Length: 238
Image (tube, rainbow, N blue to C red):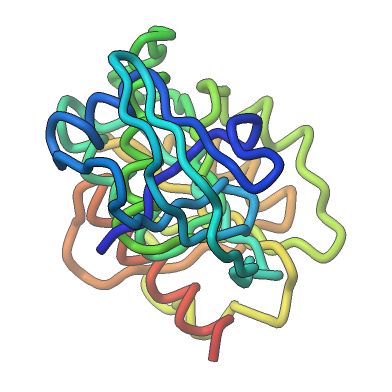
């Protein structure tokens, strides 16, 4: 059974409240009723076994029966990705959350097709991340940040104890396996369908980015993001 996200402010004094969309999902879709036991989490590393005591018209109330602290990863992997069209970004967010990416930063590159996201879309992406955390028993919620330009991101990165990896179709020799070290923080930069332009590669090299290949095949944005992320996470967690 998945565990269900509850806003931390709605868990207090061994009790919890479920409101809004989550209330509709638990009461109408999942049809939980009084006396049912469920698993909930607060997105901060705490998981709870709980019992439903009241199912009202607009909210569910219940009691916390037990709690445990889930382990949050001490090594962070951030994904700075171009924004693929349509549901492809939904899929990328879902899978990135499931495998353990720390955060997604939608990144605007010179050849990006999509260069902005509405507030409504960002809120929808956050809900996808919450749902993926629930399904995969993740201890936290992967944030979806507002879009930022690649050039601006590079200027603000803290290079200390951080590794920046950039998969590039023109790189033929270096792979992720060759460049990953025991860093606490790793940033992965995934370019748009049209690829990086020369100025972006020059800027990356100037700032000590590691340029790598993901193989001979040209991958879509969402495929490249998950492939690169999966390799990095496997290496740092073993």
